[in-house]
Image: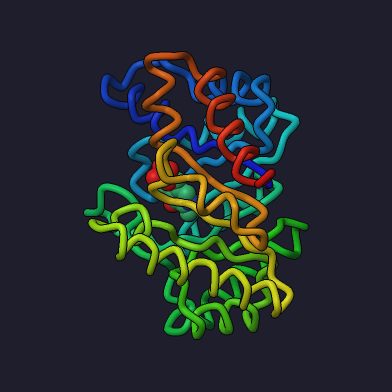
Length: 241
Ligand code: PXP
């Protein structure tokens, strides 16, 4: 199980003052030292947190995997093909949202997804599609030529009751099994925390988790390396069961 640490919020703090601290590239180095498997960053069209220079700096300096979250927007795709991250995760993007709200609709965006996937794969970038755990979306993701899907864990994370949470967990597990049976790699993320990560981490078909908010929030109190270490520990404990 790989852990990708999303460090967007480091840039969120910097952009709150439009200053030069804290630097995401420094966070990326510390996350790497803490033995995470990857750095995840989202270059949003409105550049609200991560800036173009962060993407280039982080790509140049880190040795672990760089996973670039990105929309299907042409300008962003141009940057991605120039930077050549190891992995691109295609996400839907709305300017007014606080964070990515739902999965990419691969069914209605199929032609655009295919074109962007082809462009990225021609640069040897591994392509993952961030989608809701819905069979039709998974089927289309496979047809699009993508290498992987990232299952949106938001509904699981936001469940109000234990019954609802179990229902959402079952949906994620069924979706993971189905995607794997089609030959897709299965990742998961969004809204995962130290409290809710274990059942998702224990799902055998899932090979990568991308976690941001909870890790960066904890790092304010314990430091980013310790925050990554604690998350890793929970994931390992879940896998060993
Ligand atoms: N995966 C994807 C595709 C995302 O868009 C995000 C948020 O940027 C995450 C994972 C991480 O979500 P969170 O910050 O809630 O852990």
